[in-house]
Structure formats: C-alpha cells, structure tokens
Length: 406
Image (cartoon, rainbow, N blue to C red; front, side):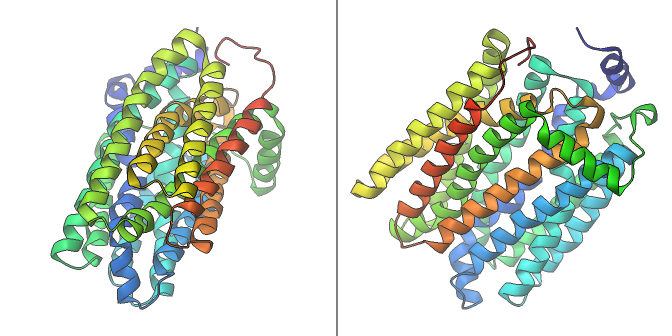
C-alpha cells in the first residue's frame, strides 16, 4: 500500500499521470538520439578530422559529461523541483548540439559533446526521480517499462536516420537534428510536464550536506549492490555501443544502413523483454529477476567471446548480442527500481549517484574497447564478458530481502 506522501504526490499530478510515460520517455530518449544517431557516422567523422581516434574520444567525452552532470542535476532537482533543471539542461543541450554541428576539430567536437551531455544529463536523471516520486516496487517497474517502451523507439529510428543523413549529406546535420529534438523537448516540458515534487517535499540543503548525503546513499548496502549491478550491465552495453561500428562496418564491411538495421533489431529485442519485465517482477519479485538477468548477460557474453576468439563470423556474434539485449531488458529497469526503492526522500540524489556510476562505468568500458581496438570483435567481447562477470558478483553482494518489493 502506498505511503501518504506517495498518494499526495500522485494526486497532485493526477491529470497528467496518464501521459507521464510518454513525456518522460521522450526526454530520456535524448540519450539514444545523441549517441545512436551518430554511430553510423564514425568512419566519416574520423576521415573528416584525419583522426582515427576522433569518434571514440567524442563518445567518451559525452559519457563523461553525463556522469559529471548527473552529480549536480539530481540534488538540484531535489532542491528546486523537477521542471527547472530539465528546462535549463535542455537549453544547454540544444545550444551545444549546434556547436557540435559547427565543430572544426576533434577537440572542439569533444568539448561541445561534453557540454551537450552536461545539459542533457537532466533529461536522464530527473525522469528516474520523477518515477520514484509517484510510484515504487512493481508499480514503479511498470511505469519504467512504459517509459522505456516510448524511449525504445529512439534506438530503432536514430541509427537509421543517422545512416540516411550520412548517405546523402554531411554528418553535421545529425547534430542539427539533435538540436531540433532539444527544442521539441523544451516545448513539451514547458507546456505539458507537471512537477512531481511538491514544495513541502523539497530538500533545502547545502553543498556539504549534499556530499554527506552521497556518502550515506553509497554506504547503504541495498543501494550499493543494486546500483553496481546496473553499472556493470551498463558497462557491457556501452562496450557494445563503442565496438559494434568498427566490428560490423569495419571488419565485416557492412553498409551503414545494414548496421542501423542490426541496431534496430537489438533495440526491438530489448523493448520486448523490457515490457515483459514488470509482469515478471510482479510475479516473482525484483531480486530473482535481477539475478536471472545478470546470469543471462553472462551467458550471452561468453557466447560472444567464444565467437570472437574463434572467428566464427557475424551470425554467431549477432546471436550472442541479441541474448545480451534480452538481459538488459530485465536488468536495467529492475536495478533502477531496486536502487531507488529506499530513497524516496532524496530520489534525485540517489538517481544522480547511480547514473554517474553508470556513465563512468560506460566511459571506462568504451575507452578499454577503443584503446585495444584491433579490427576484430575481440576487445568488445572480452570487455563485455568482464562487465557481465562483475555484474554477477555485485548481485551476490545484495543483502537478504526484507521487503516484498525487494
């Protein structure tokens, strides 16, 4: 049964609750719009800047910007409410995306990407806190899955759109499209998105208190174990994002549109299992679902590594990646819900801390893949396997369940 604070929060936004997944999904989709759309342009960017490392550096800069931004945006939203951080962040994101379109070097593109990520981080961290404002346990898992269903359209469309842009014009138009998306998101937030955090529940704390709060959240074993499980799963996902353009466009000589179709297939598998997730959580609970999901990820990455080491070709690699995508559909929403379930009073800070860990993990995993790139799938596969093994270990660290929603 929901607490009185949850009931009040839900009642306060009741007129807009029905459209909340649509609105929040559109906001969180800034992530795939900003990353997936320009993956097919990696070879073109490297050629234009005469720098083979340019794509990987700009992607790492984006992940770093997301990590830095979330540490500030979460507490900011706990203090001011949910709407203003998103509005300010989207404005920064839109202007920085135009800067990316005008970039003249690897360094300038990386700098604008970092700034765009810093602004866009509000649209990643704050929606998660908004879900926690109005729901918990299986209800939150259901809301997350509906949100991800909306957001999940972006990873299917974005790489196809990016491939189309690259095939007919400059990669710079990709970032113009991202800026247009930012303007559309601004309009939706301004006119349609309610604030799910009423003034009575806002946290008026200073810098030292925020640092202390992060320490308290990090020390809570339930949060630590679930957040780390999600972080390592995200690390495997970002290793996939960094490695697959070189593997399929480079090693296997696929056309950008063929690569985009594969990306869309993977996203479709993720969405399908993501939509199954809340029903499974409602039946067996979060803990068994998380445990099964990381074991599934481990199985997929073992298959991927064997295929990469033996050089069995694209089919075996694609099949293994699809297994990994299925595991993400269970692991990512479930670890989010489990991590935030005991932190309603400062959901923004907890969401920010979790997101920062995830994107730092992703940046490290991506840097490892890029640093050891050898024209094969081996660096990607081995990195993903290591992340999966760490996710399994982190899941074993969780304390014994004490609540039904655990």
